[in-house]
Image 1: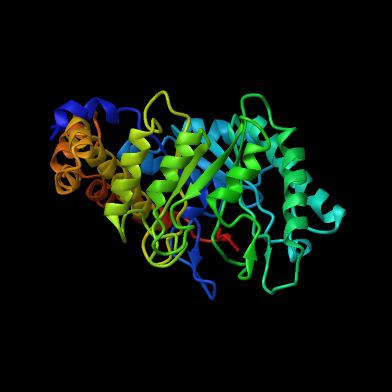
Image 2 (image 1 turned 180 degrees about the vertical axis):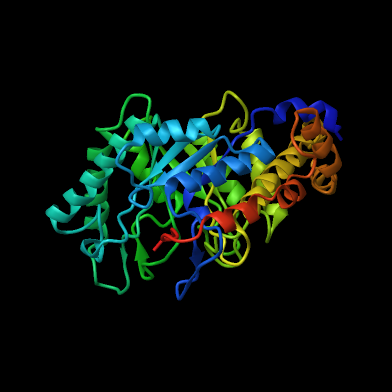
Length: 387
């Protein structure tokens, strides 16, 4: 098996984008919980995200959600982020919290409502121009709850037309990234329920349209690493939303429920050329912290991705290929498991210290006093949340 020293250099430059909404209040579909120290402005969200980067060196950018993170001057917000040592990243649209979108947005039968949704995406592209962001990420709540309620084919046709209109507006150095979701809030059918539908739609648009794979957006038992492999093979894997779930889309800390799955996914990412300086695949978290503190939750998340990346890099690819070609089923499996079971935490701690980072970012944050500081300072005002 490869040793850590041989793969350490490949960990340089790993970047995992943080979602601004992870720092706001969250909860279940029944209740959003408030917590002391929660940001009251997008500027405070960015300060918290920058704190994660300061302790880990892994999170140099922050994704925004429009209109949750709306400001009057995005150039000023971009400068604010730079002052904190981070950049503004993916711009996420929102066509699921307006009464007009009750029966769809980009798929709606009413052309006026479709145009309203398209215009919102045009506004998001204007934000991208001001922030220097590359990716416009679209997730749609569009779908139906009852058989016969909607014309399934017609909705796909309208979606294709709407996406093409948006795609025509993005810049030459920008991308349209289409996310998919198995179900919720639509339960009979969802207009973009799986990677195949997303792939079909973006393939019709052009080279600058790609798929976002959210690790929580699949039916139980789905082989997510197979989907990763296929999208990389087809050149259409644009980004990840990393989280974890027990059933679907729980938005829990990535790797918390099934670290072996995260390892398998990252192995296919590396094997398929989706990791490293030559890759355009973006790593991002998509999580909400309901019962745990938000900043430590994000620190733990990026560390989990880094650890499983290191383990995936340790797979002896030559030995694995030899065993596969020889039909050595258990031998090949053993090569995989040897890497997965390797404890790289001490090596990563030493690696961080060599780069001026704390060996244990979780402990360093707990001892820094930042949590106590923001709890004392952020009194009054309105705490931000997804609702």
